[in-house]
Image (cartoon, rainbow, N blue to C red; front, side):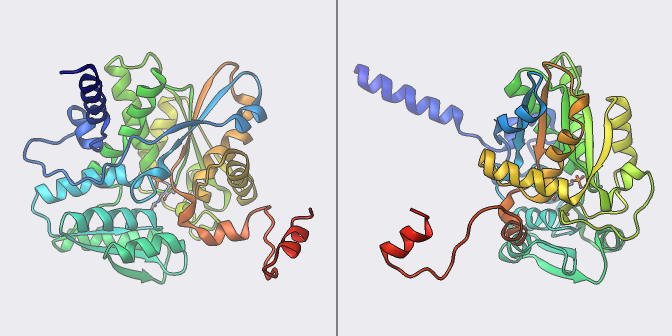
Length: 368
Ligand code: F0G
């Protein structure tokens, strides 16, 4: 073999090795799957951990801040981590249809994975409170969408009952396989930082994701893959903050429709994560959420959805408590493209329309 051929072969071997097969294959030994489990994947996971200097500067004190940009998953949210597991296990058990309640992202992800696995997908959503992009996804992926006159909490009550009476598998985060899949985000963070962060900042809705992250951090810690555990910092929108207020919220409201939830089903597990990790639950106003959302877009080139920006808003609100020299990860749970209406209505950019199509007027409009 010539030197060039050898070089070629080594490049293609590397490319093969670096090909990411999705998170079930990548973390198989950490997940409840066997050789009999049909792996239904869109090669989710392996999302980037991006340093965000604009947030670091606002905190000061030599802090390292990263965002775990899970909006880069195949359907644009962290739900894909849970769904590859939930749908693969449903398929293994011979299930033919799945159901979920959703503020949007779960429905998009459930539809994509279930349809890929050849199953029917029923989604219940709060009529009028799901961002356009998410609804578009559920429809394109072939879900049967039922928009109810009620909020997410009502929808979840209904789907839980339906799943207990009819042959449909529930794929909300009460399904334990969802949490199993989602815990891999913690593994990825430790695999890339070679240690757990000091703080993990995360938005909370139904509180499945904070539960999953904590499970992942604990498992890696017990396996000595990290020497420490992070403090779990969970943030909710102030109009929709049952975990912060420690009470049910009958009529939750926030611009961050993804986390417009008043009765989180994983309440107890989230409270354990907070207590065991010496974490903090706090709320952020819609204004604080939008400020963080705009900052990430225009200063970092990162477009997340409003619910995701709650993690950064929460960190900034609590910046005086951040220890010197610490490492912080904020989870950006969903892609900004999901909610174009919010983006169009909340930015500081210039949009001049109706400009005559000639150089002179364009240059004038550019103030040149
Ligand atoms: N961020 C986004 C973008 C979400 O879509 C959700 C939940 C959360 C955060 C909160 O995660 O519920 O595990 O605490 N969305 C669900 C849905 C409820 O139906 O898509 P959680």
